[in-house]
Image (cartoon, rainbow over all chains, first blue to last red; front, side):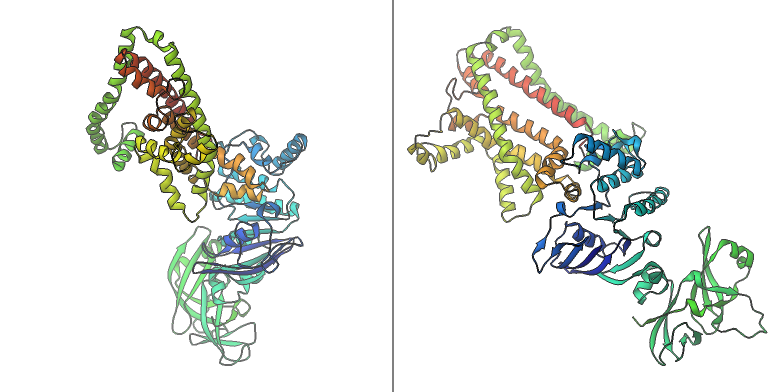
Length: 354
Length: 285
């Protein structure tokens, strides 16, 4: 268990974050410069906060009021750096064994073998870092960080130095490790997909503050504010007005939503682009609820999916819709530009105006 | 100058298939470079030829006069290197890693002896540590004489040569990504052990070249030694002083040639050694 509540003034930038991690993976998600790596440095004892407390595994390692500041050396954390930073003058084995000071020669050798097996790098033993691939280096660095018993694992953009194919590999590896380690893992990333893949809970960080700290599905499906929605990749965010009951008005069209709203309330309503539906409806039929007519104005092909931009015909909001390539072909979207767009009530998420 | 180097570098990298403009610049720069190389090489070769012609090199080198000077030079320059390491390694580390009040002042202090004429250094040392000097007079009261002793030779060499070690090593420390030290900390390894296991090994090339520069500078020290330590055979007469003494004696030029050849050999050997040490990739960043 890790509990973090720290403040630090860095020039004009103010860091002020709170979150906790049980035996789970918590992802600190945000853009570069949002303060997430600095938060990790504070937990690791590499940056001293101005105020606050940090508790790791029941032990207070930082408490400004109690004048407690345990040095990095004694915090017993596995810390994986963005730069990987294997010691270039040591072999893989020497890098892994580096932390095992005071161990007997046999115990150290045994531990190194264990770790190499765990990370599947048995054949790297005598090799120097400049003779390893990026993925191999990262595995050695992870073995090095895990060599001693650790209270938690801190990962700072662990895969950003690797190319895409290797990243997939190592993410899967990390998920496997996670189930074997049974300690809190705190992972910093700016990659949305990575955050979604690894996280049990996500803390969305911006400008030094935690905008939202919730289970993964909650953050992705029910963002707390317009900003969180934007950061987690929601492309359709509309200013809206409450009509009472569970109805809102967006750009002159009334929509049903899943939650009750006050009449006249100023709101933001959002929907993820993959949640929007396209329908074919004969012009003679009446439009079902939550539907409006729109034209495709541009489309982007991403191989396995298409992103379509719609402009309303008459009233209604402009929306972005993501369609997988199979329905795209089956529906014949390439040859038909006018559609009825359906924003299902269950996927329209209501937020206070931000 | 720097741009020119880059252009030539690229031309060389492409092994001659590079763009023709880079090559035209290369050809333009060939003559001055050759001239410069010849300017350095010709006197050194002349020294060798003349020594061989004289045919007395071996005899002169094994004379008590030469052996004494050689031994004194090796001992004092090694001692001053040792002192420079003890004082200079911590100073270089602090200058590279810590921003403290007086940082800039210390930087200037370190660089000053490099640009100061050694004779000025000698006068200053004498005024400070001579018998009637500021500190020297106090030392003299307790029976400690520094000026005109072998210790003075070491101090003069230290003053003049240590900055070369500090500058080189400071640059070496600065080139090391502090992340390596952070990694070591998070692995539970103490600051002291981190320094010995990570920081210093990574700075090895800089340490080595700095040490060689410092040692050869100490070996060739003349001006400061002459003023602060004097020219006493067996006590303060190092090789450079012996060369001057021989030059001014009846033996004249021939006497100094043999001694000069020794210093030339030592210096070239060291330089080659450092170049080879630099070629080893590991530890470099």
